Length: 166
Image 1 (tube, rainbow, N blue to C red):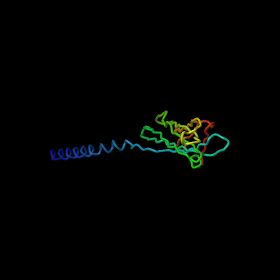
Image 2 (cartoon, one colour):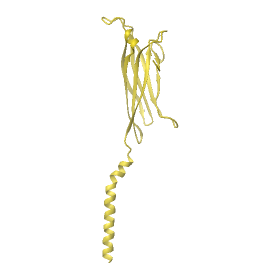
Image 3 (cartoon, rainbow, N blue to C red):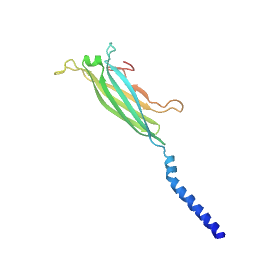
Image 4 (cartoon, helix red, strand yellow):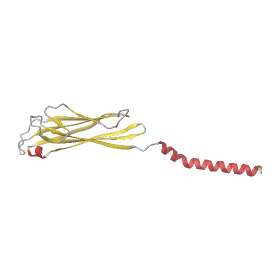
């Protein structure tokens, strides 16, 4: 009876060890949260900076931020640009420049989007105004309380004016 009891005890220990080793990978994986990504966007309409507040172009800025257990793991800035109907009709051209992440830390991302805006009177042998630069900034720095969304800002109104709506 002593040998039979030792045999049962050993068999039970082997079964527990086998179960533990089978569960070990899934327990380890459960501790690692999957990376999740969120894309935040902002559209600014641009005007010529004249007394006429005609919106001649737009910039769609996008900031994709990926998060893991330790906070921000990666981020990418992109932009697309285009002219509005009145802008295209009056010869405005917008050129996208760089869209770059300037700073990335576990709880902070700052991106800059730039380019230029000009008008061309004639398309063949164009007569164009000097290009006026635009700058847009997206900054993600979540508050202790409240929604975690980026704040958007832009360069000063000068030769280019910025508008939130068309």
